[in-house]
Length: 426
Length: 120
Ligand SMILES: Cc1cc2nc3c(=O)[nH]c(=O)nc-3n(C[C@H](O)[C@H](O)[C@H](O)COP(=O)(O)OP(=O)(O)OC[C@H]3O[C@@H](n4cnc5c(N)ncnc54)[C@H](O)[C@@H]3O)c2cc1C
Image (cartoon, rainbow over all chains, first blue to last red; front, side, top):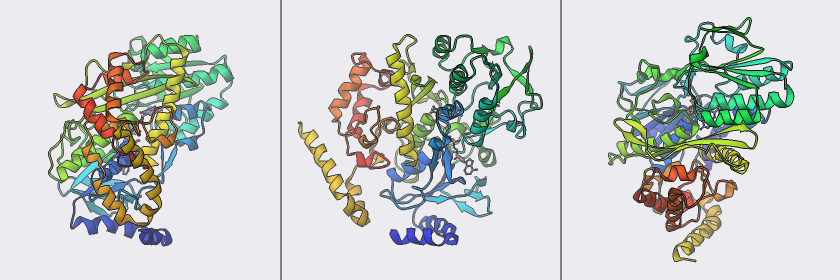
């Protein structure tokens, strides 16, 4: 297909026409699947669909030129890694490869008409689908914590989406004088990446210990327990004694209001003034999920655990952080595993083939320090209408382990990221 | 070398020397792919493996599963499950799969890598 690629490369104006025309022309003879969102979930799903059935017309809708990955962005904040290591371009999409082409539309989807089975794009175009996969990730809720809106994030970064926010938090930490107080506000469940705030606290502590040893880090938490807690706490005591203070919900950890002008965080037990404040607000499924009518009153999307089809709208599937994954945490690993299981179900439904019961895996690594990794894993399958953990499997790294095991898990963490990003975007 | 190993080795060599021809001839490629196992055959759980276990060419600290016979994978998973083989995470994962499920996954993983990885 070099001729088509040359055409696309040569005339910018023809890009949209060529990309838009392809699935429509084919749609007359074969069904089309649209995937909205090119993150770990959506990009994996689009690729998996082509590998399952190269005759399926697959369209990926994603407005960004490059994806900025969150895993390892905590290392960027701690100055251990450049942000460019987080960027993955969509160059391999929207062109012919050995599995056929995935049409890539570089636009934002703004509305879904579930009844007519059409997706509207920001430029007003609207395209039909046989089945739609929504993978928009999360939206940060700027209406849930008094004082914390989009403007406040410029002073008190969330850094819960990788990019400018990640760099802002990094730069604020770099500019903070020694002896400063860093406050990290962690949300209640469910939220993107359950161990993420504690990995972040660890790596910030690593930075403070080396560069600003008189400083302190306080975690104000809206929960009384967190992922890999015993492992994190043991490592903090060993590596960063006296540096990190965790304030759980029951000790007044829940932040009820913030004041960006004075960098003050208010809790039921009193006020905390920070030199650097990292506020991770509550979250919900990306806005397009609300438009499609697939999000419930929790803000997240209930799904069938076999097909990932919405419980609220037919022919719309939801995967990744936006979905209610049952026992599965909102992680990039889960998003990728769900994407592949969902693709298998969508391909079967489109071709009217029997469905298989899926089985899924998650493994989340966290770095407590460079060369010190810990993990949590689980195996999942549908049970009672949800994705449930297979009993007897999964769990965390052992609490007692030689440093060599922590080093090995840190190396595995790095290489997991290389492998998964090459599978999804490479 | 078992007959399976020999078959695998042949597949690999074939894949490499054919690559330039394939790029030039999508028709031939399509014909080959039609006979190659697709993700459609993947046993439940199998495609989750490739999130960590990539192509050998990546040079990852996490071992590639390319070129391993199904029997070998089943034996190792058994050893992980029983604790006989020490692991960081595979013991925790192996315990989530029955012998039968493990066998089905192993059979798929033992197929030519071109059908499994994003970048054959
Ligand atoms: C600090 C941090 C550390 C983390 N570390 C890890 C880790 O070590 N391991 C791990 O497994 N996970 C980790 N995670 C979690 C991981 O980043 C998420 O679980 C994962 O990104 C979810 O993938 P997704 O595809 O559902 O959503 P996203 O990755 O957010 O992708 C959504 C995509 O959809 C696009 N989109 C949204 N709306 C629209 C629309 N209307 N139209 C078109 N496109 C749209 C967006 O542009 C985006 O590209 C971490 C997260 C954070 C914040």
